[in-house]
Length: 114
Image (cartoon, rainbow, N blue to C red; front, side, top):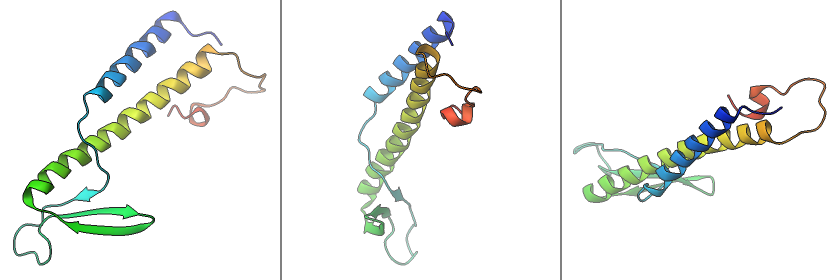
């Protein structure tokens, strides 16, 4: 199946835009932080994450909380961008290169395009 030249060019532009987004990301971190506020009992700014399948919680200062909150937002943006890049890569692969003979066309779900 040969793709149209405009579809391939559009994919190239999207992919280049996504690569540029990656270059502008700041610090990254996994996990979850929350602002419990004073009087909540326990840490006001806990950072929770999984380490080897176990949940680990660390108390943070207000400054650490603010920094880590942005780093976690950057991590989520990174993951979203990578998923979009993977989808575009699979589209390019299946549209531009010949594949084996098939009895029926592969669905978008099977190709991971949905």
